[in-house]
Image 1: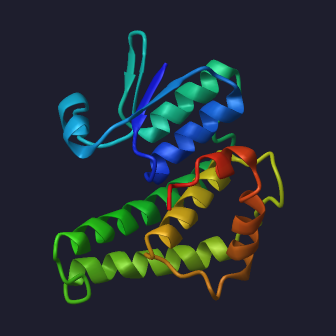
Image 2: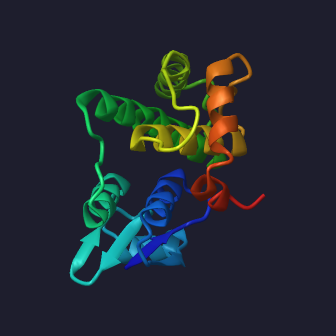
Length: 185
């Protein structure tokens, strides 16, 4: 099994953590944007190759990893909803990151202002969640942790006024698969 991606992608990180925690043997292949464009129709990471199985989205990859390991994946509608909400916030945050990197003044465009508002309201909702203090973590919680850590790493979010999220992130920081996949500084 080969997982292609970057060390900094929160989507890739979640897949790497799932593979590590499930004990499955895999090879991680660091992949840049040019290689992603050549090998994946979505032109992004992660993508996974396992014999005849080729998957191009982290949600499908996670489903496959959990299925192969005989583990639950998004076991309830409530967990799925949180996972999807985190993905929405993460997509908005990633889009603003790359738009700003490409020179777009994200503070003066109505679309990007709506994306920023979506991020803020999502963080406020995440602050209200009841989150685990220790492993095992749900895939919704793992996705949230990957998002928060990436957002702080890229200086895209601020959780200074979110003690629940700070506590959650401090706790999961000691979870071995999370610690082992921290982006290089």
